[in-house]
Structures are given as structure tokens and as C-alpha cells.
Amino acid sequence: MPRTNVPLSADVSLPPGLESPEWRTIANYQRELAEHRATEIRLRKALARDEVLLREKDETIRHQAMLNQECHHRLLNNLQTIFGLLSLQSRTEADPEVASRLSVAAHRVGAIAGLHRHLHSMDDTGIVEFKPYLHELCRDHSTMSMSEHRPDLRIVVEGVELILPTTTGIPLSLIVNELVTNAIKHGRGRIMVKLERQSEKNYSLSVGNEGSTLPEGFDPTASSGLGMTLVSSLVEQIGGHLRIDRGDGGNGTRFTVLFSA
Image (cartoon, rainbow, N blue to C red; front, side, top):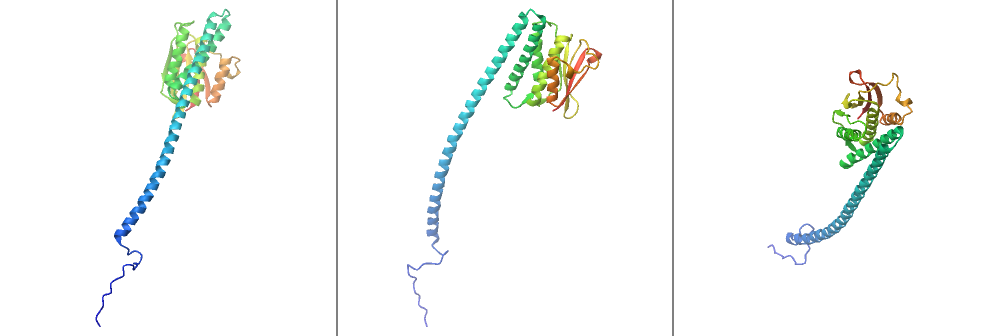
């Protein structure tokens, strides 16, 4: 019996997966294009929102930086004003004891102002390059003392480079300020400030002078003077140890602070 070729009707549906490749590609393309456009619109809106937020954040940061800068200048100006007033009063005071106390107070305020200026120059990173600051601190002391009662004063700074967190650097700077002030007042000759490494994480910071030596068994914690009381308190604050002995060649007095970095 001969085979009859029956043409397929035009409305016969083909099984899934056997559709016209051309028709399936166009349909998918149109659907994907619509999805891409919708995604693009969402992304553009999200990007616009993010740009607005970033501009607002940048403006807030700039505003905060301006406020910080203004606060820095005001604080530094106030410290310098206090320093100048105390220095002036110490030079015009008739009572030598009162004049000496005013001068010491001026040195303290000056040291704080110097440290604040040095830290701000490092963009408030929370660390301090300590040796450069020691040079700056001692230079300020030399300048002040040369204009007052010690024109022959010479302060020498030696030692290693060391970066410290401000939680250690600030107390140490105040300790050095007190010890140098004390050496200027009671010592003679040059003053030696040394920053030395004792081990991997342990350091020593010493201030020595060529003046008279302290009596045997001197206990700074039992001293009634504000300077020694402040030094002892600051050494304890950083978990350090204060050692007192004679200076180079067995002359004068040397205060050494042992601390960990």
C-alpha cells in the first residue's frame, strides 16, 4: 500500500524545546532586554542615592575638619596667651620664690602647647615621633632660659628614633618637661636628654645635669614638691619605673624613666 504524505497543519503545536529557534531567540532577547532595562533603572536610582549620600558625607567631613582646625587654633592661642602672661608675671614679680613658681608654671603650659602643636602637625594620627618632639621641647626650654637667668644653658638630645602612641608620648613629654625644668633650676652646666633602647620593646629616657647630687635614699614619691609628685604620678600612669642615680662621670644627678613601647 503506497505511503501518503500528509502535510502538517499550520496550527499544530510542537513539543516543548522544538519551537522555532529564531522565534525563541527573539522572544528571549526581548524579555532579557526588558529585564536589563529595569535593572539599569534600579541601579541608576541607587547610584543617584549613593552619590547624594557621599556628597552629604563629604560635606560633613569638611565641616568637621574646619571645626577641628578652629578648635586647634583657639586652644593653641589660649595656651600661648597663658604662657605669655605667666612668663611676664614671673619677670615682674618682686618675690623670688613666687617668680620661680610662676616661671615653672609657664614652662608647664609651654610644654603642653608645644606637644599640642607637634601632634596636630601629624594630622592627629594618635602617634608621636618622640625624638623630634624632644628636640622641639628642649629648644623651647633653651630659648626661654637664655632670655631669663641661664644664658649659658645647653641642652643636648641624643638617642634612637621612636614612634609612640600618644597615651605614652604625652605623659613622657610632661615628665621630660618637669625634669628639664628641675635641672635648669637646680643644676648647672649642660643638660643631657637621652632616649635609649634597652631591649626589643623596652626603652629608657633619662635627663641628667652636672649640678649637685641628690642625697642618698632620695624618694621622689615622698617629696612634697609638685614637680616630683607629678613625675611619679606620670611614671606610674605609663606603667614605668623611675630610677635616680648620678650623671656621667659620677657628677650631678640623672633621672631615668624605664618604660615599654
